[in-house]
Image (cartoon, rainbow, N blue to C red; front, side):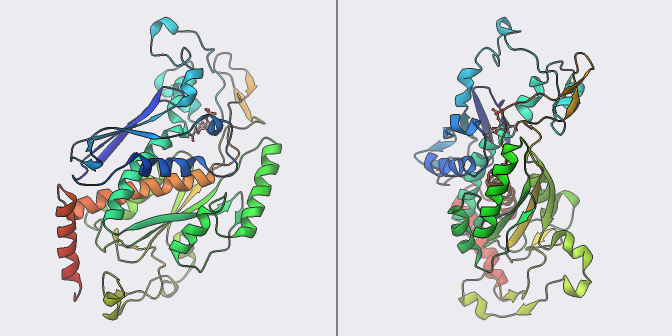
Length: 392
Ligand code: EPS
């Protein structure tokens, strides 16, 4: 399974084509819109979110609610497009109807992209580098979530930090944490930390600054053996890290203990292995048990049957209302970088995007392991593999 996206932030629409989905997977616009709505929530978003009401259209590959096995095309329209008709027009006759953006924002793709593509108008870069593109990736992720769900795999997550305010790790089961997070404007399980995050966002907005944070994605029910140790580009940890790092503004990824593993001796890092056949009666997939999950569900580039736990660090959005020093590329004079509309904090939205890209990567890994052109065939292959592991 593979996908690509197309579309500019203020163009007519974002488009994705997904190729390699099995036939027989249930997809509905409601399922996609649920995830799109989640991405638009969260405390700290800017005025663009008041314009957009994201929903997805399914334009190919699905008939009567189920995939056909042919490429699936998804479209998310930009409502803001009507304010940009000439300014973002594909027609030569509209050239010059928008003033060129010549003041690159530090921390954005603006300057590197303009130099690389030879654009004197930075808008030709910022339109595509914008995190608006994540809307359609969340729609693709919703399809991938559907495949995971059909194979009894659940995915969710929480916001762990915002601007240095750290949520107390919860001891509740993950699914309970997801329910709590869904009821929180910061997608955070620690209500005291949530209050502090919101206060910090209000203060930061008032002074024209922005905030980053850390999101944690958790996945339950993954069979062991997805990914492989045998080649660098088949290692699932590497592929998940790439997927997360490909999200706009993500600067770091941790798996399980993450960087903390480097500070501990091996005896305090590695998860011991025990054998408990009674687990199979409790609905677990394999009899092997780990009293701890420091590895975050991945060993040797493969899933090990434990919950997958990944964290991603988001930098503060570089579009500041109190701009940083920059240089005008038309005059080479120092300038305060141009102010585009901005979000003070988009960390809750980043969680939804992180869940989406993880779901996509896991769907790919599942299809590689279990093959199959239809969902039924994948289920048969999965069941036969798991049956072989019951007394392994
Ligand atoms: C973004 C800038 C803002 C954000 C946008 C990402 O858009 P605009 O330039 O229209 O104000 O609102 O995010 C979205 C539109 C979205 O749907 O998340 C940027 O520069 O990355």
